[in-house]
Image (tube, rainbow, N blue to C red; front, side):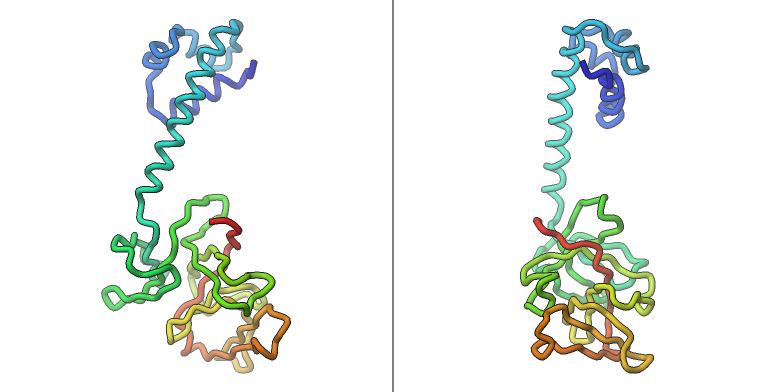
Amino acid sequence: MNYQIGERLRAFRQRSNIKMPAIAAATGLAKETLYKWEKGTRPSNLNDYFKLKVYLDKMELQLETDRLDLEDQKPATLRLPFTRNKLAVPQTDGKAAAGTVTVYDNEPELIVDRITAPFLGAVEGVVEVTGESMEPTFSNGSRIAIARLHDHRRLYWGLYYYVIDTNWQGIVRRVYQGDTDDSIKLVADNPNQARFPPIQLQWEQVEAVFKIMARILRF
């Protein structure tokens, strides 16, 4: 027997808000017995243990199914304002693809795919990498998880960023200090530097910079 069944019962009740009398009625177990198990008493009857285990297996699966159904009902894309102090909102009409820059109330916004992945940290959305400039690190069609910066001019040279220029073109590159203090240099990973030479941008040519948090292998 798994003697952690009491902890599992407690976690299930916290997630589901189902009261102990209802669980007792569904399993045929005395609620006093269930309370004891939840508080740490080890089950001594194998049949009673399996009655609760079967119930939890079924109900936990139902909770997860319901959670995924709710996720599927949410809009697939978000409108992510360039400024960090404004919240991302669902793109309810779904007309613009991820990676597109749109304007709402005179505020530029990046359309991103929604992602639920707390283990990645402060990820705010996903966009697709296009072209071969970042091969082999980021292949054409791969996806990256991004997040807004508090100050897009405070960068760590040599790291990957998603840069949007004044033409609203999104560019994935390693970023370095430019040849002048008011510029940055965007460097490709592709070994063919003649084909993908560094790009110099003045800060006035940069609309926004997003930190690349992760590469998404499957989405």
